[in-house]
Length: 338
Image (cartoon, rainbow, N blue to C red; front, side, top):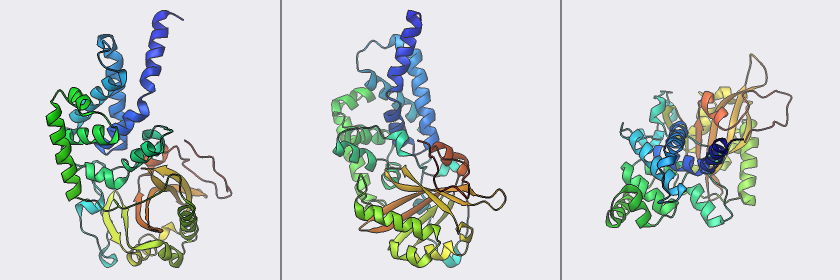
């Protein structure tokens, strides 16, 4: 192996070591799973091409965050804020429920934990990281101007010093502190639905039993059992449809009418957006077995399910989560991707 090849291989490994945390940062900035991965790939290419000019004035990690920040800010210049259905419309009573899709670029997208949460031995650090990719926090970030988003993430999620953020943004410490104060005030004023979700890491015994009961109720399509698990103000969303429902009555009513084809489904557990979730497979009447339908993200508080968010785009979410694209009817155990 030549010295040049060895150097290239070594640089590739050093850059790749930062991929997960950079993906998490770009995902929080952009609110899109696939735009985040594109942004990180662009960051890696720019870093690889510009490495000879990198003189070690800062750490490699800081330099990569500078590049990633510039990539994200450029992508955000086009405007538009990623949203959840409750950010765009009022809750719809079941009697008026209609499935009206909106374009992909409108929606805040889900992301599997494995792609955005780096392993850490510090429980407090892990808890902050998980909180910062939950749907409610991600939706709140969308309310901030891009540079305030950068400051909030670097200071409060990644625990950078104000001086380090100022250097990254080529600004003053006073400006960074002012941006952080404004960002905090905006988030306090616009508390997002789902912000109260409280899930232990790992799941405590009560939460684990709740999820087991949920799987049994959903797979058995037992609406009485499901009602017992839902908070009275539980919310159900189904991007790309802008419809969202509130309350166990409307949620279970929808599932037995417009959503009746989900009867007989299978659920596989996934970890997504720092919360418990499930890959939802519907019966496949043509091929047999089960076909991908949605990735569900569940919010839990005080022993009840408060949020039930179903992302209905199998072409994207199942491969992203490393999930199989078909389940055999006879299979009780399915090997699941990372």
